[in-house]
Length: 116
Image (tube, rainbow, N blue to C red):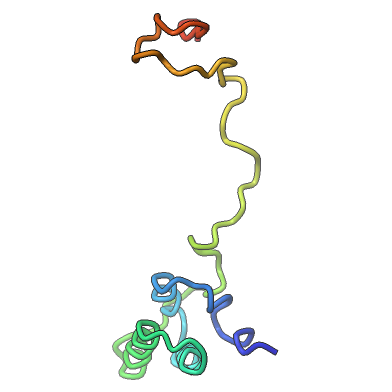
């Protein structure tokens, strides 16, 4: 079984560092320790190890407290899928999408923009 399945942040390996910085605010010292141990055993990304170490030190010294929230909640990097189709209006789309010639509507053939 993969070690990453037991981590307190879902899909930890695929999170950008900027998102990780915000998501670890919800974790307590045990959660940050689990991530730090995993990172040191697998990725050893310097900036991630440094980030996790600083957060763990702040939690242990009392300078920081876990913020509320669910670390598994949808985040901007994982936006939910749109509910419907295209937000465009098919009725307002012109039949002829020829661009304006030199920016002058009257000189563009087959384009009736004044009827709208």
